[in-house]
Amino acid sequence: MKEGQLKRQVESCTNQLQGNVDLQSAQAITTFQMKSEDNFRRLDDLKDKFQTNYQAIEDYKLVKTQFRTKIEDFEKSLEYHEKLADEIEEFLAESNVKKKVAIKRQSRQTT
Image (tube, rainbow, N blue to C red; front, side, top):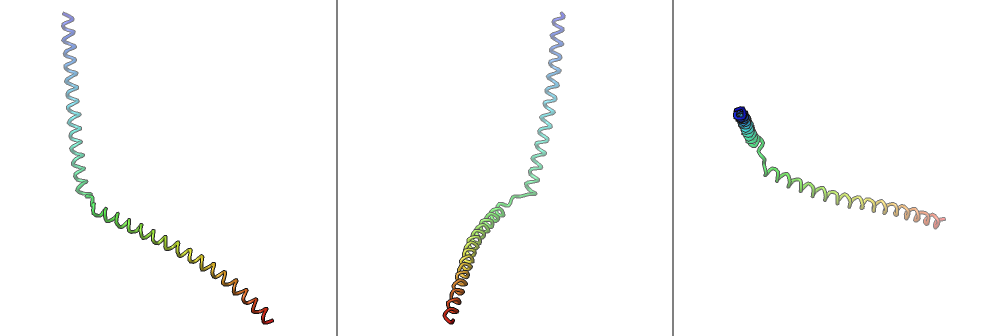
């Protein structure tokens, strides 16, 4: 009889354990479901509050591209004018040398 009682006690413990596992699993699933539903509600609220304006994003991208093009054009123009300024400085330096040479020639001819 002891073996029969032992089997019944083990079976009873197993049933109680399974009942506790089932109860805790059900509670965990319920908690998870409630939190998931809360998160979806918050997500819907945030979607309504912070609507993405795709047209504004496209407008921004267009303006950004236009500014990039203008900056590139400005940089090209700046490079051109810097080179032009260098050439003008070089021309002025050459002109000053020619002027000095011409003045020396004139002064030699008059003397």
